[in-house]
Length: 187
Image (cartoon, rainbow, N blue to C red; front, side):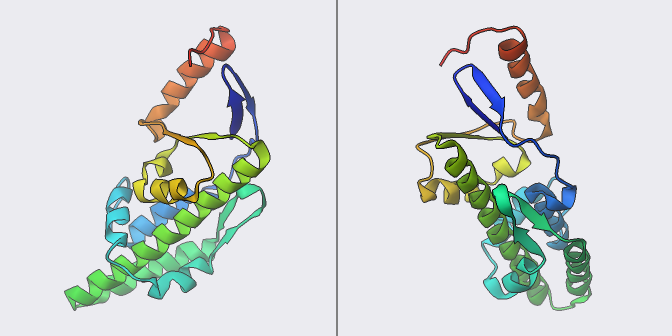
């Protein structure tokens, strides 16, 4: 996380979280449990609209909202999601199978939204910033972005279009141009 204004950016809360303690890692596991594969998180977001909260309490019990806006997901939760996938794969009734998959996706979507708002609330509290820039694969979750927008925490939102790993090169070029080469930022 960084806090910056104009051409000056400072490292705000630099930490490397294990994959299990990332919203993206959690959402990837939800995507698998919902029946999709790597890089199909958008399908999970869409499927979630067909689900209900019947699995939310169980799945949430393996996650936590930690201090400093952090998120946690346990290894036991990962195992539970794999077991849920095995369970619905054995289901012969296609409608029931779809229902289970949608309910897993619903729970994952809701938990991810709550985690994103938790992190953004921490950033707002610590920085008092009016603007937020979001990057990373989770930033492509338009439903969560809308829910964050509706909180009114920030006046302006920018979601980096190449929000996944492919955007790393954009950030590196930006950093080099402004921080290493000392070139002014045009706002």
